[in-house]
Image (cartoon, rainbow, N blue to C red):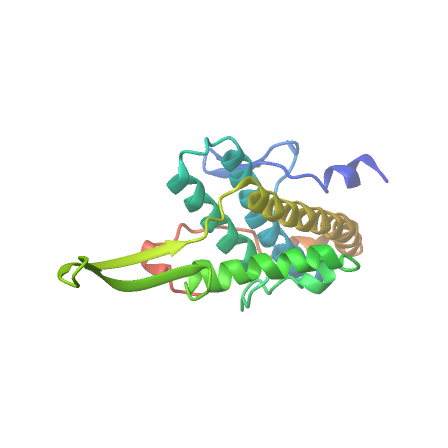
Length: 222
C-alpha cells in the first residue's frame, strides 16, 4: 500500500482557518468533497455507532474511578451508558441498528450477558416494570391496630456493583473491536472506489459542508 493510501485511512482533524477548511496532515488539500456511495453511507453508519460506543467506553472508565459511596452518580452513569449502548442495536431510521447476533457470533455467553443487560435496560431502567423493584403502600399500625401513618415505599436491587459494570464494559469493548474490524475492512474498499473515478468525477462531487443547526431542529430527521 502506498503512503498516500495509508494516510487516507487516518482520522485527520478538520478545522476552519481564515474562513476555509484546513485538514491536518494534508497541507496541499484543496477540497473536501462528499461521497454518497453505498459503501460510503455504510461507513457513516458504522462511525456513528463507533462514536456512541467510544462515549460509553470512556464513561465506564470514569465510572470505575468513582468511589462506591457516590451511588447516585454511579447509577446515573450506568443508566446513561446502558441506554446509549443499546441504542446502537435498536431501530433507527437514519443510522440503522447493529445486529447482536452478528456482533456476538459464536459467543453464547456474551449473548446471554447481552440479553441480561438488555432486560435491565428495557424492563428495569427505561420502563421500570421488572420484579427487581418492589413498590407498595403500607399502613403503620400500633399493637392494638391503631393507625399511625401511611407509608409508601419503593425498594430496588442495585446494579451499580463492580460485577454488573464489568459485564456491561465487556459488551461495549467487544462491540467496539467488532466495529473497528468492519471499518478497517471497509476503508480500503472506499479508497479503491474513489481511486477508480476520474479526477473530473471526483471534483464534481458536492463539497462537504456543515451548517450549525438551531435547537428547534432537534426533532428534524437528518
